[in-house]
Length: 633
Ligand code: BF8
Ligand code: SF4
Image (tube, rainbow, N blue to C red; front, side, top):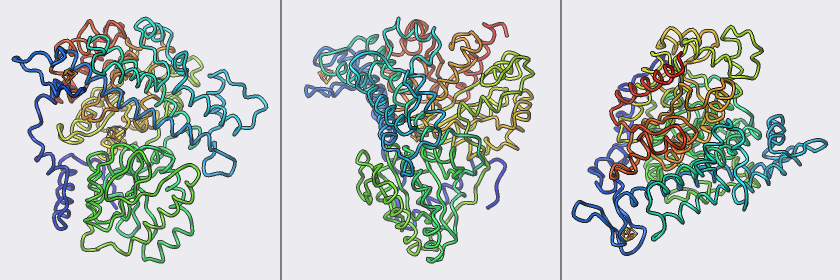
């Protein structure tokens, strides 16, 4: 496979079109078709003005019927819907974190799961006030797992990780009464508040939305990230490849999809097992090729350099190649369409979690106890399926980009150390990065995250915005499907991507030997971005809200993304969305989220919603320049 410098959106669309043609031959359905069937969407749903939380409804708000049967007005209905949406996302991310803590509890010397980064475990133990002296590392891991699991349901106190935030931020949270207590409690409180006959006051609903989001970003997600690092290793820069051409014509292709690295780590391990490789050769394949889709792809790319086949809206494409022996999934962002689609080809669609059961799949229940055995049997099943491939249906578009990934906070601090000519001892601080920003070599940073959504031309917003920002000397830190969009387009190529940068960013890329778009991981890893912002604030003496840094989710679609948006804003980072979060039906909710006197009064940041992507980019640059001007830099 030839690696390409940059792949344009038009080239990717042409590849998808050829895959859809492949699908037509076998009568496959596609999201492209289903979008047509679903258009136009319900206007009440889009504006957030439909309520069906009790059986007197559903009630829909119109000029003629301004209140529901219970008397709730449009602001209460839109606000409740927004809070429920947030709670769904917070529950989901945090449950992923909970699974990681359970896996940590199962770690043992020589077991399926082990402690790969003991220093990190000890560091967090010290942070949590846990005695480490004289303890075996596994004894400590189990103790930390139990303490972490208590963060979900403890009756008193607030989340332990809040102490990582700058003091000013902690004070804002306290004053606004949005410090998250136990994680599950914030989800339950949200669902209690949105029950019929409870909260309909917009301000109260939005405060709880922030609090519930914070329980995700500074609770469940942060534990998910930190303890994944403890078990699977803290990511370091590693070279890999991305886009659909990473699938191999002559190999057994196993696609891992979902979120929890506990599954994908084991699949990767057994794909390298000599016995499995020999089996693959015995069925006529050259070997076993693992590649990833969605956040699982990010997890294994960051830690093992596993190639990334695609992101959310290209998950069907991997099956449409006709060369996918198995698509193995755990939880979240998995299209139920994969069941029927895989039936059109020889592909095995393997579900593994009781949380994500789907028709037309083979369910192999995966747990920490049986992880090794089940991962091996999944790999074996995929290998044996190679002989069922129909060669005339194989179509792998030749699109592959080179990408350097794995920029955890630890890695960013390390690579940027020494870029600026700092006289101070900069080891282990963000000061070099700050110097680049204050000197104007870099104008600022954008944390770009989130999904694809057919409401936005897929990947176009991510890629075009990134290009525009790097040309303006704004460094990108990305995660989730946004990261894969960048990788597919070649924007993480450490050699060539700097050609697209302004002079300042180009120089930083050359000196630090980094791409201008830094891959920080999966969506739970947005918690890494919160810690980076906190460290920048502490090292500079500025509040987070003063830093020339903004967040952006141009193509978001999931409840998790709204939860993320809420904790990013609540952390003091202005956040720019390219898709409306079903709030346009209420002027009061819009004012609270996007105005000068809502969330901005509480946490010094707010939302901007702009569906014109060009304008969205201009607004971000403008905000970054405003922040610089306010600092006199
Ligand atoms: O958590 S970016 S489509 S894969 S929700 Fe899903 Fe969105 Fe992708 Fe990961 Ni995040
Ligand atoms: Fe209608 Fe009120 Fe029931 Fe909602 S809670 S469905 S607005 S009656």
